[in-house]
Image (tube, rainbow, N blue to C red):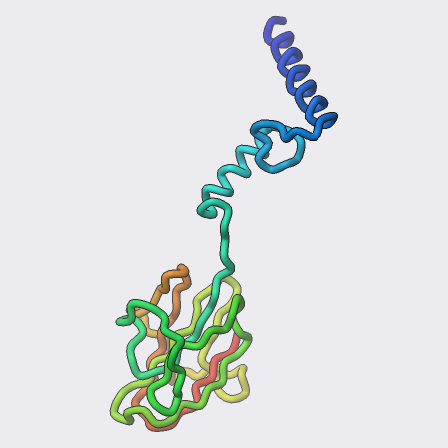
Length: 174
């Protein structure tokens, strides 16, 4: 009986504070999410703010790489050079992974390998393909020991193409 009375009293106090808020324009202390109530949803909102470093979240930027430097040895993504006639580089795809990548690379050092790095994301798998964009290029396998993770938390699968002075590198979302 005492427990039931306590819960009824607690409910009345909470409902009273909500109705007072609804009648005034002064923000209710502790109403983090602005719904006019102080409840568990406000705790969830605080946790979400903390998880997102103070409420500021940036969209993830994705890149792909073709070049003659092994991306697993790089400390950062540098998009200042994407000259595929002289060794390649990183290219931004914006905030989404592209459906396909079709890039001719030529020049560079014919005695060195070409490396490709494509983002690994849930639901999006870019695979090396032939020009039909559907047939897997089985001559190019992902490295099992090398991946690259940038500061934005995106992991990239690295593929190695044998040395060549000219190559068309094609990836498609399968």
